Length: 318
Image (tube, rainbow, N blue to C red; front, side, top):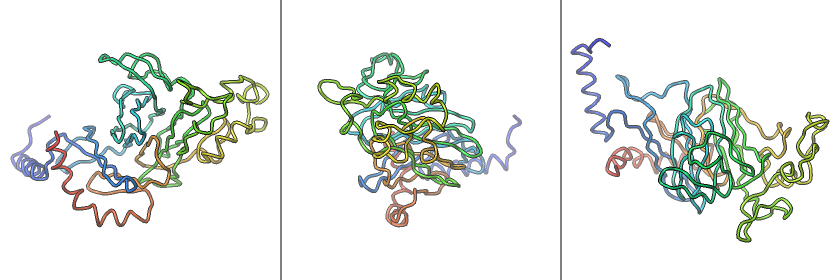
């Protein structure tokens, strides 16, 4: 690459000084997620953007994913394919969050693992959602597990599926997108109402709910054989239990009309153990974006001074 001209070098130095005054160093990037209901701001730092002469600009062919743990316990999200997600697995303690970017064209899954025990080398086991013996997943999680599915394209498709069972509440909130962009997921804890014949127990406590297909393995429950099409495969007693509690999540294989959603150019917040109506926001490229809520305008007025101070705060915490 040819060297910058003196004029361009001076422009770049001036922008560097501006970034330093704002508390942001070259190559550093930051993100905020605001939760009105809990009354605090979650902050995650990520470095998947680059600074240029015109300031930070996220590639138009990427989506920002924020994973938030609102559970009272530590979880270990699994992601496949995981090249853009720390190799496919992370640990999130209660109230922690983390941010990743994924390119358009990524087709993948995100789920939560519970009851895990990994050593310093990332080897271990999980009570639910296990993808093998590694922290970083290269294969899908073992059922039962609540599952978020994404196909990123000019128009994204996304859903939360309970077809393979349920282990923890999971909600997907698209933000700053165009189109339908509905919130998908299951914010009810089905472990508390899980029928005993499909419950997974540990120490006398229900830790997950299996699917009827996994338990009974019949063509009717599994939508296969003569039941392998949307005409003959219908909801069942067990899928109706899931659907009544979680109307915007897949309850059986052909539950498409109320379960799959589309959105263009959106960011995604994937929250474990959270309410669907929770207000969440992203802040990047010098703009604040929230999911639709009457609280959004209040956020801008009350929190904006703090937002401006966040880069400095983040540098102090490093």
